[in-house]
Length: 155
Image 1 (cartoon, rainbow, N blue to C red):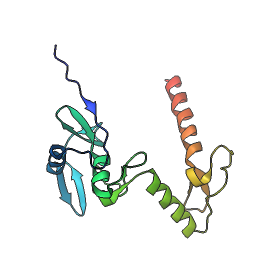
Image 2 (cartoon, rainbow, N blue to C red):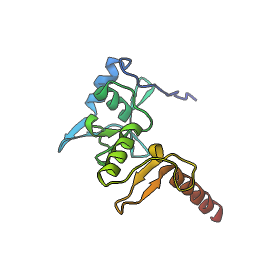
Image 3 (spheres, rainbow, N blue to C red):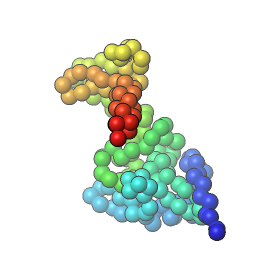
Image 4 (tube, rainbow, N blue to C red):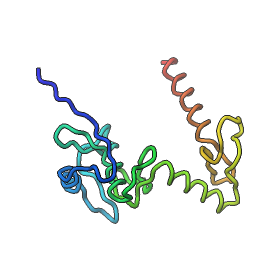
């Protein structure tokens, strides 16, 4: 039995092979200012590119091609269009936090200091809700993990 070994390649500026770039561009489709991914997608939502048994995550690849810097954290489509990988629409952890701080500042909310539980810094984890209250993503994640685990045990 032959088993194919696929490895995930790191995506860094200046280190993407030309064959990968051509394969990447062949799988794009322009729709209303978006670039929709036509290639493979893990779990139907994460665009990936396979070239010579090497897996390249498509959104970080598009980020590097557009910004020429490595992304920080998870790369998502800010336009919320499924499978969009258009460079200007992509956000990483730094740009999303910058947008949260800007949104809060426009509404007169300061994201600074500890959260309500005192476990996280609002400058890093805080966000403002439309009703002018602040919440903490760190605490939300902990609460979500506890809720998910309790549902697993109940089943």
